[in-house]
View (cartoon, one colour):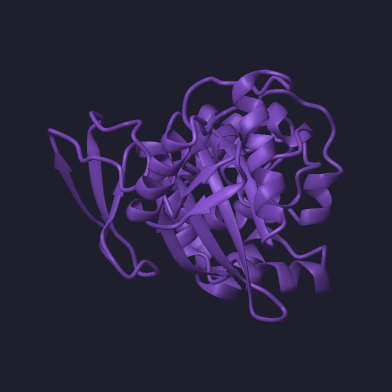
Length: 281
């Protein structure tokens, strides 16, 4: 479907929290959201679009609730939030409030599983012990008691793999960024890959020696889309040295010798829909 994007120059107020009221807003209509989403950054738009393409995601919500982590309360509506603040003032108490950015509902073996996301599009690296990181960790603990996974999703920080708040979908975007860094572009064929991902993986598991050209022909998709198998699923591949061509198999790519520069040239060849740039050039 076509994504409907419009911009409000004044920016909306947030539904629950108070931060971000003056930020520019983007209105986003998705297949898996019952209403128009109001998001505050291009990074949040990208995350929502990626989730909207996934067959494993059935529902997308923006700013689904506010949490008072100090008093362990989850407030689902603005009226609940206002009433809670009033009670705290009357009791001479203070809360520590946090509003997550997105909620994805994933298909599960039995029913569904919810994941709540904080999307950081700034160059922020978590430091255990600082106030904000502590708020996120306490949020995760509180939501885990309710059967909800809480994840941090940060643009361009590979160290997130080593942190406990890594998102279920973080690998998808982090590796996309590596590809974008190499090409300085974002291939629309990446979205085509997502649509065929499960079928691709079934074939590769059954026959690891299958070539990129064979996969491309089988599913009638571009060679570029088949390359995402190696980038998004086989993270052990050295993306900067793997030889590449229509006859390259998954096994060959994973066992590639260390030859810097081949990856970028091969990516440029596919971008130009030409395979005349060989790995031996």
